[in-house]
Every structure is written in C-alpha cells, then in structure tokens.
Image (cartoon, rainbow, N blue to C red; front, side):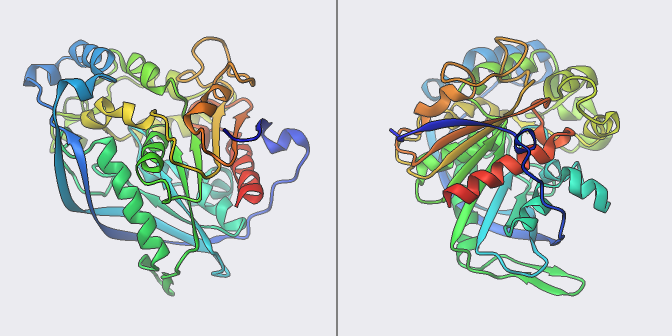
Amino acid sequence: MPDWRKSTLALSLLGLPLLSSAGAVCADVTLNVHAAAGIQNIALPPSFLNNANALSDLLNFVVGAVGEIWPLVPIEGTYPISAIYCEPEDGVADTVQILAHGATYTKEYFSGHGLESEEDLKKYSWAHFAADEGYASLSIDRLGQGKSSGADPLLEVQVNLHAEMMKVLADQLRAGEVVAETKDGKIGGKEFSKVVFVGHSLGSAIGNAAARRNPDTFDALILTGWSANLIENFPKVLFGNVLPALLANVVKWGHLHLAYLAFTIEEPMRRVFFGRDGSFDPEIQKRDWQRRSTVGLGEMLTLFEGTKVAAPYKGPVQVIIGEYDKLLCNKGPKCRPGPAYVPGNAADIWPSSSNYTYSITPDSGHNLNLHYAARDAYAAAHEFLRHNL
C-alpha cells in the first residue's frame, strides 16, 4: 500500500496563484491506431434498442455481470483516431498528456466545446493550461466518437479495446510518431520521456483499465469525474433519458447504428452533469446540449472493466471530482473529504501506487471542465504532477 494518502482542495482556496496564459500551438491530427483485445460478444434483440426503459433495465441489471453473460472473443483492427495535438509555444516539453473524454462527449470537452477566443481558452482549455505549465497534450476523440472511426458500438467500442488503444497512442508519443501540421509548419515529432493519462468519467475508467492491463504505459494517472461507484450510478442516471441517437436527432445522427445512444431531454443532462446554478455559465450549458455526442452501448456494458483493482500499476494516481457531482456523490448534497467517502474511498483500487491523492473542486459539478472553477481543477492536477513526476 502507498505510505500516505492525502486530499487537496483546489489551489485557489489555498491562496496559490494561477499562472497567466503563455499560449499553446495546436493542430488537428489523425493517427492510425492498430490494437487488439478480447471483447464481449454482445448479442441483443433489436427491441431493446428502441425502448428507453428496456435500455435502462439492461444497463442496471447487466452491467457488472456482462462477462458472465456473453463470451469473450478476440478482435483486432486499425482505426483512424482524430485528435488535437498541442505543445508550448517554445516547443519545449518532455512530458505529454493524453486527454480522453467521457460518455456523450468528444475531444472538444477539454476546450469548452471548441471555444477559441483567448479569454475562453484561458477559462476552459485544459490543453492551454498544460502548455503554460510546460506540457504537450493529445486530446483524442475516442473510438466511435467525434471524427474518429465509426466502429461497431456493440462489438468494437468496448472498454478493453479502448484501453489497448491508449497503450498504442502512448507508444506512438514515446516514439516521436505524432506529427501535426500548422499554417506555419510541423509541430510534434518529439520522443516524449513521460506520458500522463488524463481522463474524464468514462474516459477515466478507460485509463484505469489501461493501467491495469499495461501497467508501464503511463507515468501518472489523473482521473477526473471518476469513482469506484461509477458502475453503480451511471445506469441510474441514464434511466429513461437515453435512446438510440438516430431517434433523438435523425438529422445529426441518422447514419448511426442503433446502439449509439444519446440524451433525448436537455434537463436531465443538465441536472446530472452540472452543479448548482451560478457555478457555470448558462451559455456553456446550452452549448453543451447543442454539441453533445453519443455513447456506444458496448462501452457502457463493459464499464466494469474500468473500476477493477489495478494492482500491477505502481505510478502515482490523482482523482479529481466536483464538490457537487450528482453522478458520483449521491449519498449527500455534496462530496466530502475522508477515507470513507467519494473519492477518498478509492485508494484500494491502486494498492501498489507510489502515491494516491484526490482533490475536490469547490462549487463544481461532474463536468469539471465546463464550470467557472475549471482552472481550479487544472491547477490541482498540475500541482500533483509537479510533486509526482
């Protein structure tokens, strides 16, 4: 077990300054990722996919037991993954962060849904904050989301395959194979000595699965919007609120497989993913609804892979959640510190970790990156990296 555990409040409460923006150079890039994994051979009658209550029942009663219901079969393929690569303006960085978004989102989550003004980037861009601190970053569209390959949402878009893809991406970054084009020339191509995984919600679950399956892939894990009870709570949140995306918006998603799901009603999504009124910009919440994405049923049914004990992983881990995360802290009005509460009670997931810490971002909800306190979460994460890399 790690020698010590600690919790941290967001640094702004401690009176520590936040760095001013020095800027980042960013560019779109598409990476070919060849990965193989064992996946669940999920078979469902079409009637399940057209009925919100049937879907909710399936998620509530099957998640966690999925490995006992469907056989494990091998899958292998090469998938184009869309990403945004960023690096500090001076081009100096020996550590890179892989940013993986959560369910019903794309890589734009880490930049306030693609906001581009200098003021907005300062408020809502994890990548720009990281660049100020001297880190490069690769924000990805997970398989099946955004501009990444439209894979089978039942038989390919599963947590184990996601996890193996994270290893391949990390290997590409270490080998200097990630190169992006800007109007002024190429960026990237660096052989990074260290790779940090940063996830949000389902993305965090994928990071934990990756660390369990390939423990030497990452030098540190930062898991936002994650807790050991994610598998218990997420299906309850979705109850009656998700349907096949093509039924929710035929113009936007009419080309998708029925097993790509989306929120159909705005208010439940706002209630689950955002904190108290006044803790976020209403225009950001509206943008969140308008630019929402989907989630593959296969990744939801295999979510349990991302909450298993990752005993082989020896690196440092930080979990960051919002004080008013309704998805994770459902036993009280707000999350609180202490080993008996979320997220302090997750320490045993990483018994070999060199250091497990957690941070509760004040006055924020589940989607930390879309609240006024986003920079507080960024600051806590990078303070953790300063002390653990």
